[in-house]
Length: 402
Image (spheres, rainbow, N blue to C red):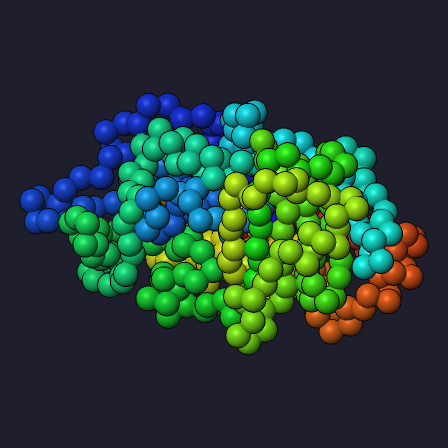
């Protein structure tokens, strides 16, 4: 599962028609396209970065290897209220793409449960594939050239610009390069940056006609079924989502099955008689932000940077927040107002200190006996509320020379 409002206040919440300056131009017939910013990955982080930079006046291109940004996602699509409150773009999301979830029902291994709520706090369940496709359209409306079905393979630093050859068209040259291409980032590999090595492996089914207590995120703790993580279920947008993730062990990622969880939770969550309408599975980074996420005129955001909560595996909030912040920072750098964001902006990436500690404890001391006996105690409730409802209000960094 997976700020400072004033920082974003200088950006309008919607895009005017793009000016000619926003459209990449051919380099005097030499077979290359020049842009100010090239973003690799039409992810939440990549699209937020591209949109913010375009709104600040840069020419921007996005490369995405998939033919649809919403295809083959590895996310439940849950967005926390903190993100809705702090990322203005989310105010424009069509209501049909989201559904409100008011609280969490946490189950111990013996299936006793406790309901968790926080005053004024809720989550969005989303139609994540449709949401990302909508974001692509909204980003294009800001003048960004989003090229789907285009694979990034390498980047060369020449004469003060990045050169990125692509097989589907002319070579692209860019003043700045941002990698937002997921946990197995090709940009990180090409540029010699750190790469994710610690993962959860998750699988999720979508059903129509499933039955469960509504308006809750159901979370199931069980060391045998989900070591290092949980199972979950929720009524989403037009479908119900039921999933399971576990800490990756050598050679066992492909063996993860949902059936044991479905059998265990049948008294409280039933998928119905029909088969799932969709199945997704994949790796989720859980080691926190990586040690080296930038070099001269290039940086990583989102999953590529390990920007995922080590405990909840939630990353959409930080992806949108820091993606948008990176786009603004790059725009100011290209205009000569601040230094290279690679030297200052990335220092503000989240440290997840508390959640890294909880992740370590969960990995080393997870005990079904402990959860069975402590669930519902004030101490366990407090820890659970910190995990699910903890708010972050730290502002994004500013260039010290600005």
